[in-house]
Length: 99
Image (cartoon, rainbow, N blue to C red; front, side, top):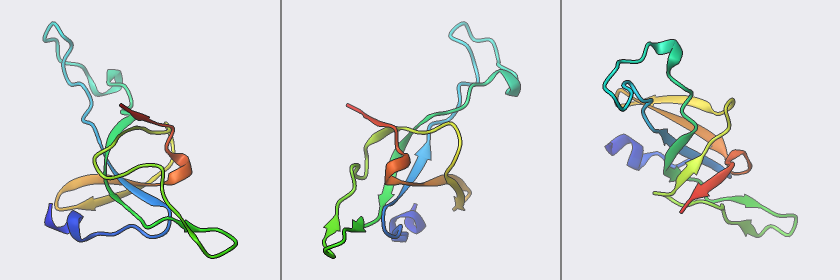
């Protein structure tokens, strides 16, 4: 986790750790890989400073570290750090925040 803490995304990029897919049903039946749904939720682990507007002012991002977010089905850039998988998205790619 130390490498993730040292990583700072640039501009309006957000690093997300996706939740793990469900491997079992509530009844305990193991699900084959094809039956596991896509994981569209994750936790923000790092954020960039934001983008600049035409006046040169920094526009802050809409999420912060620790937020639980809804992700698009496709997109993002996969990054592997310390044997864990993370994804980078732009701020406007994030679909919503869970409260």
